[in-house]
Length: 138
Image 1 (cartoon, rainbow, N blue to C red):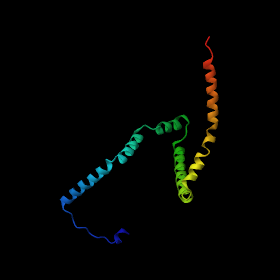
Image 2: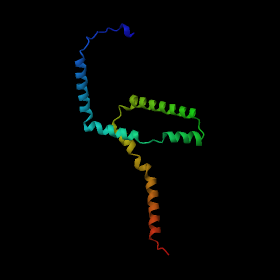
Image 3: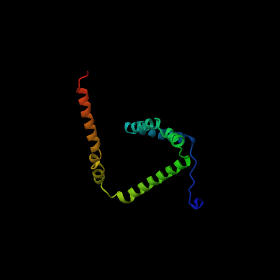
Image 4: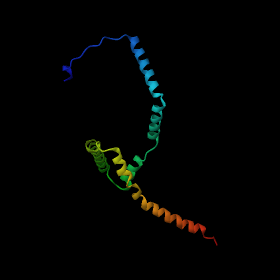
């Protein structure tokens, strides 16, 4: 198929122009990479990826302790990847027309209701601690 595309032959370049082009492009690359708005996010991503992750240890825990087969875990991984792709497709298909405010309202609105029980438990624990701390030691 590609043999049938029209192709124009380029004239050979002199060796001096290639070096000048590499120096020019290298200078432009350095100028772009030395900007603070570029190297700070790049540094963050590098440090984030350089930190140790628990993936390998968790895999050995699942296979050795819980005796799950590596083939089963591979199938689970494929399933999660497919679900992720379906989620991206569904978002692009139906949810791109929804306003961002609708997303914020639907995700941040129920948040206080979800954490209400945790606040009630922490306040009851705090009061029992304060009573025990106020009791005189004998």
